[in-house]
Image (cartoon, rainbow, N blue to C red; front, top):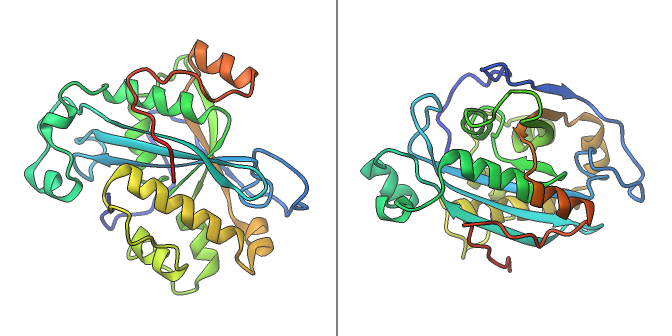
Length: 258
């Protein structure tokens, strides 16, 4: 979903911890889960669709994620699910996202969907478009801040990357479509304003960044952020210990990424 122009503030509410830091360039042969570009061994590109643009008043209607890994950061797995927002979806949003009330009637709740996203991602670094001021504002409402109920995750925001790449870049004007066009990463067959379609587009954007001539400079400048997600469920923890991502995802329909 496209974000409306807003103050690109850096403070998440409800006592959600967010830290931002810079990392130094790494040798491409060095593997680290926490380096934004060269050293990421596993990354999850994700997107949400919602009933509107105001996190305090609106809710999630769809979530999707693509897991990428290896030296070439190839897509390895994916999931998508409708989400029941607990309220009618406005007609204009139904028209934009093609998510109807009947699609979400028996879908997981937002809290359940956020838990599923956390389980699917495991220890991977999250990657998304304008997620600092949009997606994670929706997610944080459904994270229990009590000890033992949440965990720290790292994420990279497209906005930080492209501010470094393009002097004329504006957080208030550039959509994911604009970014994909600049990188020639757009895929004509992808359905936009669909969580899975946008996650696939984000995966392609990340792959293009990997081949960018200024990649090493980016790696010294792009911040990695931290926030909270639900702690992994027992079955997800077992999968992480075994380095196995084939654990059941409950009601989430899993799809192969092509």
